[in-house]
Image (cartoon, helix red, strand yellow):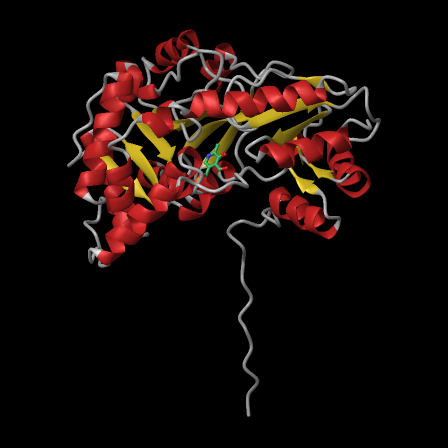
Length: 386
Ligand SMILES: Cc1ncc(COP(=O)(O)O)c(C=O)c1O
């Protein structure tokens, strides 16, 4: 009898291990720490949204939807972008519903990147970008955001563009730094890209979390960017349903046609009743128009509570993150500090070094304030001892 042996596998992502989010969440559970690490709300979504999913299921919307998404949802998304940003995407040919932003970004990369093409990411960056580029056979080109301010350095971005550059990935409001790109930033990017054939993947999942009266400057607002851009968003972030994994991509028809070729043979379609529910829910703009005020209040509550600590607070212009400089609190590096904070103080945070390929340590950690006030208060009571 021969023994059944599993053949050896050569990893396509040899440097990918367990993510810091999983590690910190497990540690938080082990030490009963308040988890301000992973970015997800600990409060319920609007019950009307849940009712709308139930209603869609009861109405029989339980089979495959069209490949690109339920038409009513694509129409609602198109109308929303037109209303907010003055750019009309054709819902039939220029909008696709995806299984969250993560799938949207991977699919956009698979659609445009050929083996050996270079793709620019601005570090620190969301953890899926680099492995996604590698899966597409691309070469990752890392350009740092300016340490301290996390502002884009357009001279550096411009210098990183070569004849092999296929795409640039940007993210505003930004995870993890909570910075927001201004109109001037977007215009500068438009100028840098104007003489090139480089595509833009604009990760705008925190589009409705921009504070202090600032506007979200979507790539769709800038004709020179929109013409080359996949604009990505996520209902999970906007409507407090990160587990639903439903997102959107808007792009010019020629780019979307290619995107859909990959989407079709990757996920094919995204679950039907949730799409119907979101289409109905989008008829009322209040939930997303009120989101900046909702999160700004939580940001202010959290920041006010941290004022008495030795943490130095970085600005939080958008997203649901607050970064702090730990250098007056501890001599530990970011990762060790986060472990210590979880074990000894009982609050989990994420080290910014996790968002850099080389683990660059600038003594800054990230807290997520998408939490109930009571969760934030109990975290603050613990942090006030520092
Ligand atoms: C910057 C950024 N992009 C994309 C995502 C993923 O979004 P989704 O859950 O819709 O895949 C996240 C989630 O944390 C994020 O922070």
